[in-house]
Length: 233
Image (tube, rainbow, N blue to C red):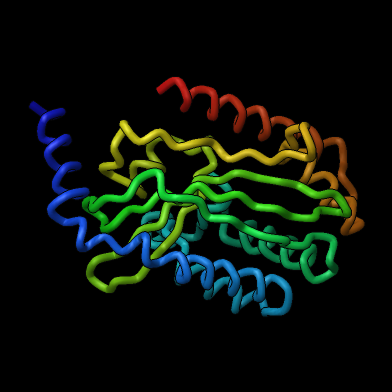
């Protein structure tokens, strides 16, 4: 019975209410949100960057349940740590050690009305120059339009999310919709977050101590293990 009800809901969302879906007509809005983010990374203040993130980041809507923390690359961490990470990223862009080349949003793999609003899953191809090397990444970006204010928010799916966190953001996300874990490649080689973190710190003349290296490797293994486990579920 539960499966039948879910199927009916999906049919209604994609059929009778199709006229209410705005994803296909909102790509310019999505591009504008990203363009503003890149602009602020290059020349905005940290406060402007935070304000932009607060306005469009879906996870910020859950921050009142996690006082003193921010959701940053797949986990809730101390707010000061998240700000430090954002500041490092901005420094990389402003020194042109990192350059955004292009983002190509593809056709939505899913678009429906859920309990939190309109959901639109947009596979996106990105190209970035990182310390002189061209990196290509693939990310499923989940856009959410809140029906009460018609505003779009976004969430970049990583694949290593904890089940409880993902369900907090998307309480009734259909299991039939398969999200693809994000990946970054340099030519034919996959680039790990640990490798990028080490190169970024070294580029900013920040010493990578043995303790830091061990912590990065430990975190990378946790991410990879969670991605594998999530693919099985």
